[in-house]
Amino acid sequence: AVSRNQVDQAMSNVNTLMRQARVRPHFTNGKPDGLTLTRIRRNSIFRRLGLRNGDIITGVGGEPIESVDDALKFYNNLKSSSDVSLEIKRRGRVRKMEYSIR
Image (cartoon, rainbow, N blue to C red; front, top):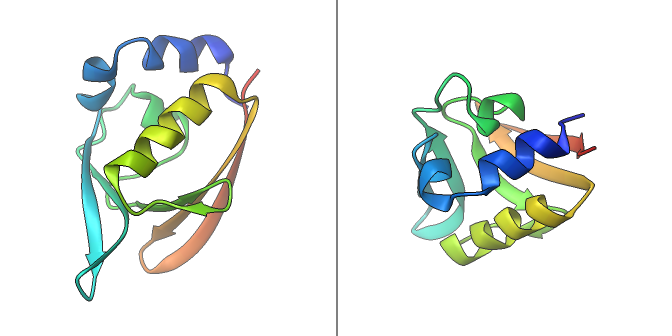
């Protein structure tokens, strides 16, 4: 579980949030299929969510992430939801991560 306070604090300023990790589109065979995370800062919300450098976020709540617009949906989802699931690829393996935000 992640505290609602931690999420709210991280989400309060998009510019600060985006300095906590580098987020870039990921492509396979020229098609967007996720967002790659690198340079994740030690005390960032990304770390608290268990994400690691090199992870590729491929979906949120069963919906694919293929663009920055999709990432903004994730951002808004995280701000308002109490339960969130992420689909990621880590070292070539697909994983599902479930979060309760209380």
